[in-house]
Image 1 (tube, rainbow, N blue to C red):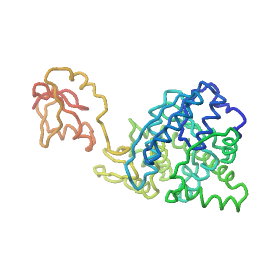
Image 2: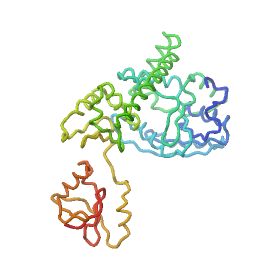
Image 3: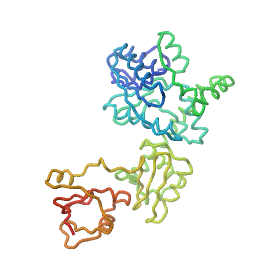
Image 4: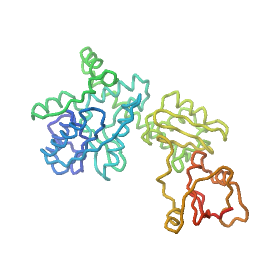
Amino acid sequence: MEDLANKDPFLIDKNIVIALSGGIDSVVLLHFLNSHYPGNIRAVHINHNLSKHSKDWSLFCKEQCHKQGVEFKSIDINIKTSSNIEENARKKRYNSLKSELSKNEVLCTAHHQEDQSETFLLQLFRGSGVAGLASMPKIKSFADAFLYRPFLNISKQLIVDYATKYNLDWVEDDSNINLNFKRNLLRLEFIPKLDSSFKGVIKNISRSAYHQSEALKLINDLAEIDIEKFNLVINHKIQVLPLTELPERRVANILRYYIAQRGFLMPSNKVLTELISVLRAKDDAKVILKWHLYEVRRYDNELYFFDGEPDRSNEDCPLFNKLKDQANFTIRFRQDGQRVRLKDKKHSSSLKKVLQSANIPPWERDKLRMYYINETLVGMESIGEMSEA
């Protein structure tokens, strides 16, 4: 689809969810898709609570959906003030949208040609490689659903013309004129100057992003081949020893691919280079590298990747489910110097050694639940049944 006059074949018979901000782009997307696919549309608004107008924008979106007979839902998120507020907002927004989607639904966002050009230039100025310069794909897997950008090859002017033709209303986000945000600086000052000097520059930048996306598919194919051939990922952990047998360029490619698959923001080249250098560190070396909101840790020749601090509190434990309804059941956590006797063992052992033998990473050991009945230790998460020493 290269205009706003025809249906998008991809969306025929799809269950469509629109990310509705209330701005002109998403308002046009709502009107356009509802005109062509009535009855198959619902809209979700993410209220970031960053502006004094946030509630008004949510109400505006609700009214627009009501007028067009579209199911509407608003989701509130709260973002901690930080130096990277844009990334925090993006991450929380997409996590909220992921949790909202049902299997086989298609989430549509209103990103257009100019948005793609801005993304390409931002990545270029950051010194990004192929993955960054590929910018935004038109379609990608998104949890159990799909993320689709039907306007990605549509110019902003076509969107404005459509809004004018149908006399649509929209809201203006006051943060869009804040030049402290790099994207706004590009949109308001840099790209207009380029556009006046180089004919078709926005379309050409978008074309370059497409070429990079094709190259990205090829190097991702290579990463998938390497991971499968050398059995590099087991239980969501990268195996260090076989990885280090590969040339460094392919090691870097695999790490970039794996990080992208996890949905993490890509680390800087400096962080990635440091990670590659510590892969050959001593087996007992404690390796923790952090970037943005993420981190990677090495233990027992495996790499563990985390989105924020490791959290095992919601993990299921069969032993817990077996014991939780018994009388006088309590949960405790390990203490320094504690000794335990595993089931069917004659002698007690240091709990520290038991955990080491079970290959439990150090950062998880203090969080493992220990199960007691009538003050007697009967089992431990990830270890199994035992008797009090």
